[in-house]
Length: 229
Image (cartoon, rainbow, N blue to C red; front, side):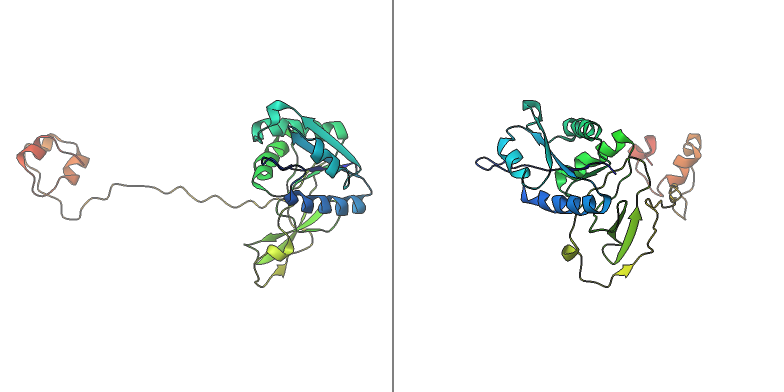
């Protein structure tokens, strides 16, 4: 397996520098995955003014890739996704990890779509090079997911301590990577007509059957001249 790439977010608040603490779980997961797959860890920073963040990130990874441009100052998925795709292709990475923050949840699905890659979200445990454990059924069960696509990425999210304190059941070791639900039949809507229909006057016979069926029992002269159903 190639390089494990980690999308690391940096501080954007005024007066703050360095990487965000929310990205530390993704770095830990990347180190565990690298040990199981025999590869190294590469961190990628996207934004503007990344000097301090790059120096701090170098303490946790073997290599740092930075995309420091004024156009990337704001974390927009439309601009970040192509940059991360370039980072994956340039580094030859076989996995892209990120903490499940609001930014990563917006960016990484677009990256997966551009790469044609598989996706695993809310990972809490790394079981193998391509096998991960994640909560299911609102945290009441745990399932193991195996990614079988040639080029894949995963989003690492909640820790095990953040799961609800309820009974958890271990899913089979080889669960399907994607669970597809059967779509429901579309609901059919029909005009609800009153049971007791008003008598149709000679003047009302020129209306359509639907208008006659929906006509009220007693109407004023103005309403009879312009019926509304």
